[in-house]
Length: 471
Image (cartoon, rainbow, N blue to C red; front, top):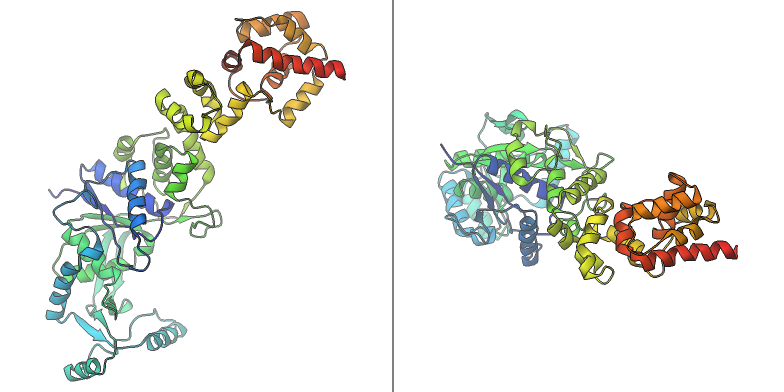
């Protein structure tokens, strides 16, 4: 039985965003579930826009997400090299084969001619396709045009009166009449190869068995199948996943909220949170808990990939982030928080503070609020807390100061204040929280009270005693 091999083949013209990293994730999950291989290929044939820094960045992003590849760029393999810019010899070989078979022909039509033809077809309600004007040029005509220095492309002759059919693992049986496709360019006039050709040839030569990619590639597939059949190369199984759209149903873009993986990392997202969100963006999981990649792969099912557009929801991404924070072990939590808390929390108390703040933190910068609530000399007080403090009985904080003693935990402290003041419930705990932390919500008070210590707690309570006496 053939081993499953999937691939991710990005063009390094920018940082990878939600759409392309989700494609990588689905291919990783399929490979892992099938005990197969995941391959990384770099499609850097856009020489003007492809940059080395983007190649390095996408590898860093994939490794951060733990989307490890077993073959390809930087990993090596029998089909090396894995950058298309280094594979021209292979493309020339298969182009020669197509020329020998008379499956390609030179096209001398100018860009203006092609544009006029497209407009005429569109006005007639026909799909835009090449008219075939140059398909039957005689050898002497071709030779003369070349001698005249006319630029030309090479077009693939689509089979006539046939239907290109394939079973899409997401969208079911697909059928494309060859007449609706027309002869298409596989080599441009500048000598560079078109995506249709190099992408298909590389998948075949690298042994890729399954291609999961965006539905925007659906109409590319019959062209590539026709090419592979003409070259007598193996055709992979295709699946075209739904596109990600924004709240208005438009394709997700940076303008409408799409974030690069680099931005997600810098904001403090956990890799497991990003993976859990993306895995559910266009794929249905029965399981609702946070899962690592192994668990996600075991639950992954190609039949659960949806056809409808997948709507991006930042709130859902943050939900999985909150789940990741709660499930992180103490060491991971501390490493995640430490850079944001440097200089704010004493090193000896960092672990205890991280445990205390965990329930009220989604991103590292959130922890700064609670670090100030515990350690700040000049305590920031929220508007809500200020309103609670102004409404509290005038003697409550004097009673609290008198009740406070060293080595007293929060439970004993509040019990003593309750007995002395008669205050209870929300009327007791909310003013004390507001006075001690400057907030009306937050982590459990026993932990915060223990961290701030007797002297700081007494100082904060005395400020409100003095304030009420002045009033």
